[in-house]
Length: 237
Image: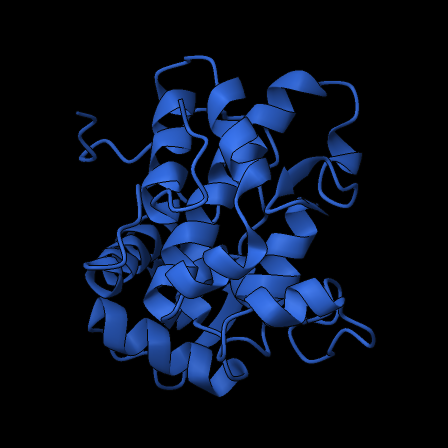
């Protein structure tokens, strides 16, 4: 049973996500997360890679848990503080926009900061935003990226792989009309990606195509529910 303050927080996040994937009980793991000492958690999340791996796993695990438990309140599970980590209550929005996006306003297209982030979020947030997190976070919809188990040792390669796979699946080209159709995530978080010119650069470099002169169009986002969408190549021990 997870009771020690010296527990491996990264492993705990992976174990929680694994239990979700295998549809096993998560109470003991949630209890351990709740009772981690905040200072100890900060010490273990000493690098950007460790922060990203832990919080991406946490987000993806708790979305699945909350979506199953609050099926008639889907619009609320992002903003209400429904789970506890290190003695503090968090919402999914806290994790995504407060920690992983470093105090960005949810509806500001990636350009507006949060005005009054909490002290806890300030202590736990990444130092700089990695736009590839948008290809790693899963909110249970058909258009969301599939879920991986993120490991700080290999997270740079994992995020790169997730981005390439997602953009290959979500990008299409009409060479006759000089049009490229891309995921709507680029629009919703345009500032995170560095603006439309940098979006073009990301598409070109990731997919190794020349889209100079192409008109950019954003695909409709399918909110049809698709829970349990794990990366097929991800093996569970």
